Length: 150
Image 1 (tube, rainbow, N blue to C red):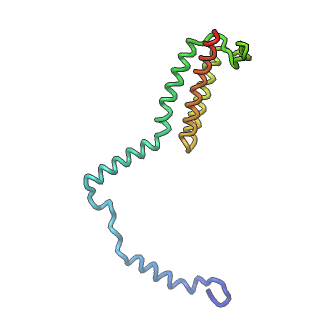
Image 2 (image 1 turned 45 degrees about the vertical axis):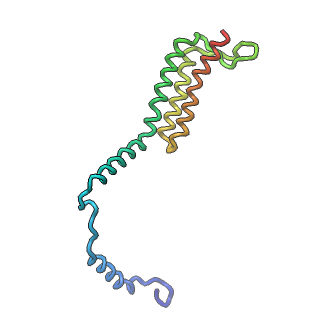
Image 3 (image 1 turned 120 degrees about the horizontal axis):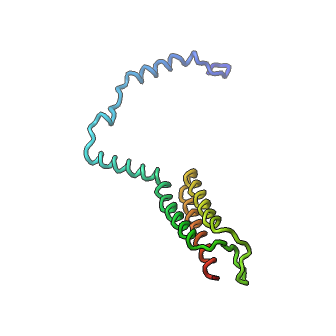
């Protein structure tokens, strides 16, 4: 800074040149890659890479059993549900609304698929995964409510 209070780069230029000269004269530190790795370090590095890959693919590993169970429940419900499925069981034993079997099978599948899609998009993997697990209860509840009154 000069007397006027402004920064004067020209007065600092020789100092900057000296700093860059000092940095170029320093010996470069040895790199770790040039040193041979011992067996323990190699094994630990391989384990670290495996765990990192498993962590990055956690949503895939969590989604596989949910998808399998959702498809199994849909196949079971498509065989065992009646042609007309009742929703909202009243105290009188009648249903407030009825839907077709195909709708009762596909809608829980879409719900579970949407939860799994959210799991792949979200940074938080476990929240949508838990919701997809709860969405697997929908086909079971449909089956129970339609088989017990009959």
